[in-house]
Length: 186
Image (cartoon, rainbow, N blue to C red; front, side):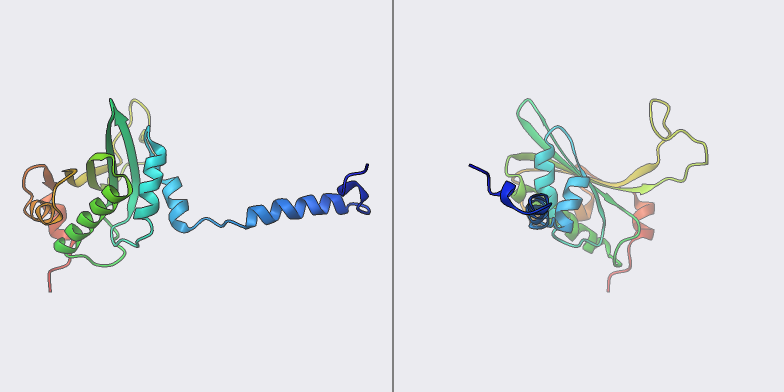
């Protein structure tokens, strides 16, 4: 008994197969958040980094999120979030920046409930001369950290906001950067 496709005239069987494949491929178009989550995820728990990324990249942040890492060691899950401390999408006050940090932390814990700790840092590029080695064992740094904070699960958002604003324990602010990066509060 002949198959259905073999009874189709000419190249119709091939066209039908092509149409079915294309229909399946076109049926799902990934969102920008999906694409960013995949492109910017790293670590030994990449699927968790991508899940966090889909949540994080669903929001348009003033400070660009450049990388999300998820790493597990001996059953402890740590997520890292790197943001750029330059070229904000809109002007920020220091308080606005802290609010974005708190919101990023909340979204991350919600997207990856097993996370014990989040390390979030902001970097700025360092100019390097032409011909300088920027990768490998002899690499010169191409960015520097200007803000960092470590957040353990269970820290209340209000306590996190206060700690980040003050620069208390576990928080680093490069004050020279902070003086020039933010607009004055209204």
